Amino acid sequence: MSAGCVFCRIIRRELPAYIISEDENVIVFLSLENHPLVVPKQHIPNIYALDEATGTDLMRTTIQIARAVKAGLQCEGVYVTQANEPAAGQDVFHLHIHVYPRWEAVDFQTQQIDTRIPEEIKEETRQKIVAAL
Image (cartoon, rainbow, N blue to C red):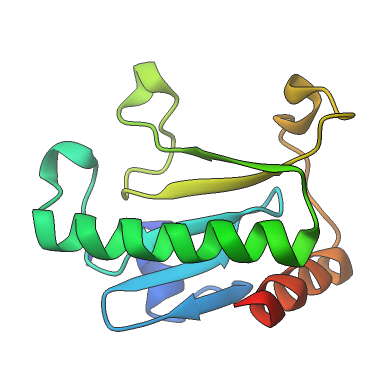
């Protein structure tokens, strides 16, 4: 793990997070914007450093979380994304996969806005996804 990495600090429980699930290799918690992030517990900076076994664990968990997001949040679709390096928009240099709930009536760009969500709404989101797992 990396000492200064915000995700490593969440994994070590040095920072609070709305944790949805975890096992020995992968943790899932809500982003500041209130959508799940699927994160390897091992500090892997980007996809180029990802080994096949961890990649398998990440994708397996991403599929489970995507299904739970769709069922728990009753969204019309799920958008999954993963960025590498600043040119692609990566701003936390610990590999992670975003799982965004989507609704047709809401403009895609509007859903991309970096908005901090109140704590009570984040807990409600977490509970709905956990219940659907």
